[in-house]
Image (cartoon, rainbow, N blue to C red):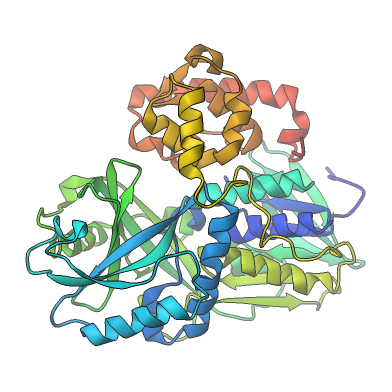
Length: 516
């Protein structure tokens, strides 16, 4: 079936952070936009990062100064437009004898502080770990170190909110709709697609943006286009254990093999440890932390923490496949995290492909991509706008999250403090829209478990494209860390009911259009 007799100005293929960012930018500049995602938003690489908004301190030793500078410039920009899902985080880097010398660490951190336009984030300082709060959980041999700033992000919600804002600007967002063959006819792209219900579609557009991440080369093949770069797929695996420390600092650790990894406070009761760098073979969807990777991260953590970490302590793992540009680096961790944007006009209509990139740079990448398309798509006549426009729910000051939580705590006293914290950090001011004037759990349709209400699930289904329990428990939230099997089953029943009700009440939503 044909979707619309009027061609879209931009068809974006890929619902990760780059695709959602491009859709948002283009829709806000006045274009008719269609976003196609084969699965759930952020189901691939974009929900499986280390959850950091950072410049990438380790990339300095690979001389990626431009990449680091660009990412550092974006840290405070993103914090300002999404202060609910992004927050500053102080990292402690213990000095370890025999690895990088102290002067080199100090020089790298000096550059890190000064090349990216840091304004609000505090500067680096040397610390005595025998007296610092972060020193307590560490082995006694770690006496000296450094403390520096970066940022934390709820990566999957970053994608969902960009898609949400794209839809609020008129974009059509279709999840679980896989793009098949693409061809150009009479100056227009024809995209054949199918959804998870077995329906077939044909979309027409004046341009296509290939933001397919690990599948970027596969999509080019389906468009009968030649790639401009070779790609290297690198798997990054993470483990989650019960929290190893009580303070709010994160750790940047060095390993004897030259690699680094992080240990980060995670979802109140846990510690996130990662990441590995392994070349990946096979489909990205099949990425899984190997026993060797789990053991590697446990052994690395045990080199630093007083309490050893073992595979038996691991409560959850996740792995993402990073699509990196092949630059001839011998080791996966040395491969560039930079990006390339290539515009192909060979078929008579623009095909723009995004190669590589990292989550911190997504907004800038999207802006640059739309700038390039604007020369060929008249509808993209609007000016740059995403630098200062808050994402949904983020219309408050960067230091305003505490006040927002206090407001919700007073207005909804039946909510536990942990639930108030989670809701404020996930939805920001938008939580008011589904909490409304509720005075108890019954007004929210009942509590399903662990502070998750029917009203919140309805919001995720009708406003954030959630369709399954995994969408809700592992991407829109991380409540999967708390839900028992019987609670997941109860949630599944609610999700099925709400999806059915919403499909009947809002057929245009399930056909991909949400602009109410």
